[in-house]
Image (tube, rainbow, N blue to C red; front, side, top):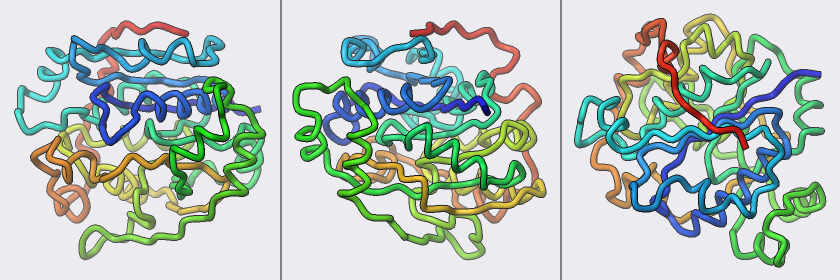
Length: 291
């Protein structure tokens, strides 16, 4: 059986609404499904700390959650003290997790996602190609009915709950291009669940680490996969679920982030992988706890 890893980056700033509830549902699903979960807390205010510290009592911990904290001073240093850098710099945080993941397959996902079941992912592997980079389209769910299904048992992310989600949701077919010449986005919000064999991630050297602002980095990493000779495919199963958090746009629409990556740089002008060999701070020892 293949070993599966997932990497998630977030910041404890209540982006959208009900971050605590969303994080709990997300991480319990990831812990249940994956052999290894890498959660990178990026730049959370010191006065609140990582969201993991708040939700730990409601997590079904089983020793596969790896928790890394990048505090504000280090986050600022890693983004060259750029005041316009994303307050939660996903490309750097994702690469830190991806570089340390040990799974045969590695998924880059978000804190708003409820993962497919392990059984469904194992079935997906049987029909997947190790030389294809996949982006799996999400289904939409509201938090209120989700809480109603859970009742008081917030920490019980079990298969019957995900079965109920499948019945009460629909496939989301929402194609998208972000700029002329974009043949790589394939679906709207392509970065919610990006799946690839570890050899693909290593070959393309993860996400481009100069894209420190918001937007377009998920499309960029898919172009990089194609650029390096891998296939790219959007699929609509197995089912995974996005919990509504209000206005999106990586915080740009709500004014949290002030600057976006240049879409031409991210898509049309990406001709090679510019990351160094030590992408993901590979040569830097980073402390983490295993829960």
